[in-house]
Image 1 (cartoon, one colour):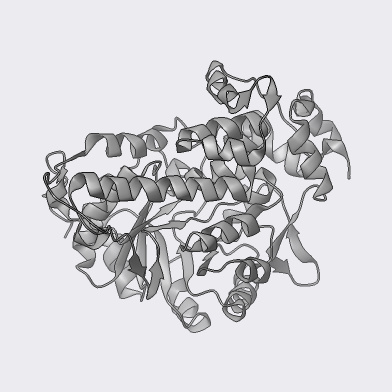
Image 2 (tube, helix red, strand yellow):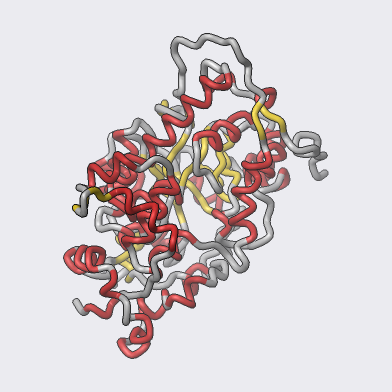
Length: 425
């Protein structure tokens, strides 16, 4: 394994000064101490930025084109304010919810995040273990480097499998069968990726060259690789570039971990594919990437048990509606026929509460836990979940609401038009 298999540069920003409080008397604190002193998800983001190469951090942190949708996901939460009920005594605050027949300790699941093993050697296995310990679920991406059997085995909670058609239908069917036999309880079909979005940070940082280019092509991206010796050592000890263990090509074995932009362009999922997916997968199917009432109703017609209101975290088509803004339309369109989940921009427990008030059964969190994974592995993911869970409980108590189940739009002030927009014919 050569040192030039992956590399990048990073210039530490001024904001990194905030992370230095995680040291005392000139001595570096232990990982456990650093993790316990993280206060919010932004702290984990800063820590992740200081630990991993720019190419890895920007893959996690960035969005498509001008990153307008990426920012809109956050601005939508800022536009919604609370209407609390004061002088209310709450002895016990009930955070549990039920999603596709499974009880969760609080209304958040870990979203599928590709290339997780580049962020930390623990990768998907570490995230799934942390999710199970927190009483919630984990969704394993097709673009993952731990076998689905390994991931399900280490988690005490539910594991779902997210599907791209990488390698074609036969390869996908084999992966679906493995997920079923491993005990995954739902299949999440991503419908918003006919091609990969133009994530401009990736070509600037040499993602394609570093994953699959020649040694000569890698050279421009290597000079500051050694600025991250901890990450580099862990990467090399983990064996260097892993493979996509759940995309097994006949006669070749697992697909190499390469830039998947070209591969995705040949694997578009259509509504017609739901017919054979229902035959291949007898359990609940979740359609991820729904933003309109039309697509929500089509998902119901095609047999989806749930939909995820998602714009892929602002990583596909730019200038899309924020997911929180699109949520009420989708909720109205499905009319309680299926469960509605949501992702995009969730960084605080208040964000989760706002989504539940507007009709989501639960949210999927992606970057929020991935920052923790990149920063400190399983301990970082656990801390992210702890922060969000405590945020949700505190928010409910301050709202005067005793349970997640009792949240509704009356607890919010929502911008004009969000709840009254007429649905398309």
